[in-house]
Length: 342
Length: 124
Image 1 (cartoon, chains in turn blue, yellow):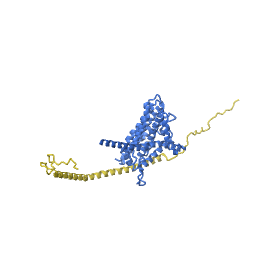
Image 2: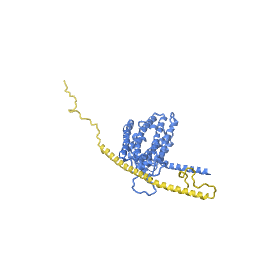
Image 3: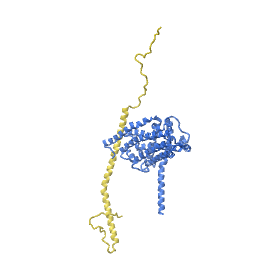
Image 4: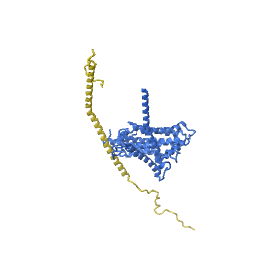
């Protein structure tokens, strides 16, 4: 009798945990779907076109139609490819960006509104976001196509190079906080959002996340005029959808992390007293994330592509020295004026 | 018959320079202005960060000292409570065991030494 009760309790707690996780994952998956339509509509607006406007109201259901089309397409597998790795690559990329959704689990959406208040949150983020490279490498190698292989080499070296800049910028934020915990970082920004004292750092951080998500000025791994489609040249239908999803989910994830690290997360100016039951903090976080997503698309609509050697030399010769200089400068300021948080 | 010829020569003073340079208008603030502006913004930001950090330190110091001042009171309270519970337990034992012949002295220490030992068991 007692045993049955314990099993029941365990089952109920498992179900509640699942609901917890799903309540975070499902909105994020929906956001990924709508990120694609937002990008297309915004690009169209920049180029004074209409954009997709047929499916649903103003074309909002376009991503669903796209996904349906891609899923019912035939999956073509190259006969000389390594079939296991060929399938494993998109799956691992998507899984790591779904672990990225585990990152969503440690992102606070408001005071006390996170699945887990992990004290080493930023370490966890950096560790998991580095793992996505393996999917790219596997995809390029296993397809047995020189185009895919070249694309994967380019992607991998660019991502590894720019991860250095990204980690340096995040390290500066960590130094300014003395903490790796997201909630502590957000609460420290009640004094001022870190984009103000760290304006130059924010600029090269933004360049680094553009390169890390392989967005437009740095998207030569997907350059249509030089390579066919980058590392996923041979992937069609569902494996392609996986790559597509993971790319857009990483855009949203990095936007969210940017708004937490530099734009104050769920903090907002105290313009009025909110005594309703509506939690405005999560809405504020969402708005800030949307602003960064908008900037992603704005950059894509504005800038031309870099050449590959320019991409790498920009990272190693220009950005890295600046990043190292700031790593020295910021703690020096904290120590010199005796304003360290610890 | 000699035809008078004239060699085609450059004009006196040479050709003028080829106009290949782009003539782009200079727009926006200059480099020094941008550098100064960014520095000013960063300085204000660090000023605010510093104020916030100093306030955080002050709050931490206040918390530590409030705990330091509270500890004697809490300790005295818990001592008083432990003593009251112990005396009550002894009284209960005395009441229950009054009719049992040969029952040892209530409250006698289990150790031979006469040194005081604080009670190891919290009596609830």
